[in-house]
Amino acid sequence: MNFTWFATSFGTEDWLYRILTFFQMGGVLVLAAGVNPAVTETDYRLATLGYVIMRLAVVAQWLRAAQADARLRGTALRYAAGISVVQLLWVGRLLLPEQWSVPGFLLLVLAEISVPIWAERSRPTPWHPHHIAERYGLFTIILLGESILASANAVIDAAEDAERLGALITIAVCGLILASGMWWIYFARSHHEKFDRLRNSLIFGYAHYAIFAAAGTFSAGIEVAIDLDLGATSLSPEAAAATLTVPVAVFILGIWFLTLKESLTRAKNVLIPALAVGIALSALAPQSLVLTAAGVIALVVVLELRRPPVVDSLAE
Image (cartoon, rainbow, N blue to C red):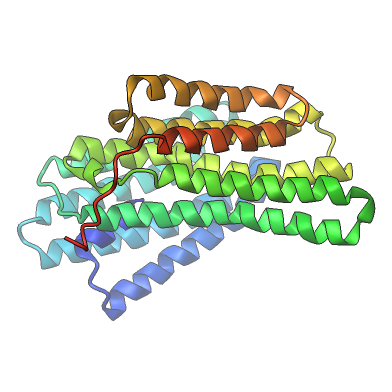
């Protein structure tokens, strides 16, 4: 997220900017390699190393911005200093006793989130609302695309397993409906007007943590549904269903809160959260995947019912 906001303000696209971007990508890869030992062995060293590599590359970019833009030098130096201090604290967290690991993690998450709030108080950086909205939307599409891949895997498995053909085709169709419906709901209203001031921009940006997490977890939920049908998971049917229905509900509630509620009637603002809660609870019912797909279709219908016509700004 920090890189997206930096890029819209200071993206120079020269050779050093691109190399620093590659360094950040390398840090992400190291972090990803450290996820398994972090989860299975509570060994956070590799994940922390990857994260620090990623963030120090951002520090270098902020220092370049401080050198190039005298007007925003104070803000850029605040970013560089704040991020650097937090990275030292991440490394120091590795030395904490195990019982302090989780509290230390939560405190450092708050510290990371606080850096932009503190830095922007010096002098806000400029940003392009349409560019930011596009970046968030593209990342959402990438995450939802993972569920399309999972649905494709269901079709492939169905072709190889005639006995479970019907169930796997149902998973594939419902997965496609859900991904399409979530995409439709996300882009039902424009987002760029949410960046009119710093407070709203911070709320929009950080609230997307929940939306991105829900979209990613939903994709995993499709895979769990396939595993349940194939007998490859020890989860109960209700727990397996919840890995899909709850993320879909969280995604819908997040989008409703961020971009929809201000433009909807009172009745729709009651109906949409109620449908989202119903989707989450459908995990307790038989055929929960079908019910969830039906709920998402109903949500799309509610959003489009008596919707004011959209004026094409390009035509104007």
